[in-house]
Image 1 (cartoon, rainbow, N blue to C red):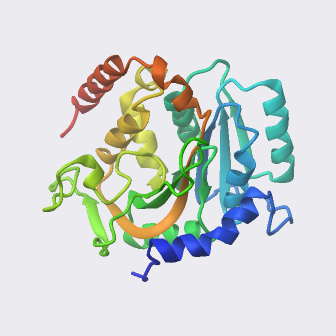
Image 2 (cartoon, helix red, strand yellow):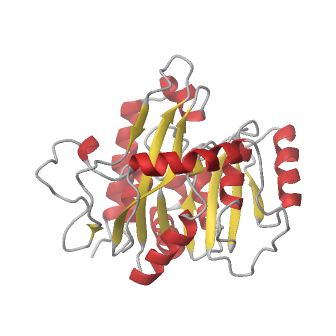
Length: 302
């Protein structure tokens, strides 16, 4: 495997790329036609996010790997938002738009995008996040293909943009003393790696509980969702949807691998959908729902 930059190196190299995307700069303005068989489907659930999604889109378009589709799934958007997305689509035919007829929440919205994906791999990306540099797709896909991986997990950097939080509050989902590539999941080993430092879920050195910073084989993702069933993924929930997704996907896959590549910028901002509604969410009820869904999902395990 190639040697990857540590956190400091990756973040310093990413600054220019991040600023370029935030300014809406497109490296290659020449139109690239959508392939009939895209290698990657980037699935982005959206909820009236036209004020900041351009940076996300540019970080994808500015990759040095062009054989992808971008699936924008709009969770009952305003007319103004639809017009804005259609404008982006006219600039790049690799963008495909799916509109929910009513507000369904992130679990359903992301699931619909995954089920409509045409690529071999799915990259879930949130509408306000960005890829960290132009080589993320090419690097991850090369490793996924070479090792025939169902899931490839890489690193993210979290930055808190809320005005009441210090700008220095940057969190990383990585611990520097874990430099080796690790096998995360094999059926005979179980779901989580065991190490002497494992005391709490936050001690794990990968983004195991979140959907971002992952490359997932489309057939694995679709198989997991079809087994879960539309009745389950249609549930409106703004807390724990990533947990449910991760559990069903990892337990459908045969092998997943962690690589110490910093490739994803996770932005925490005021006004995000989940943070607006979190106080309204019945957390205990949601946890029971997730547990019930997992039990149903597990009935047919070999």
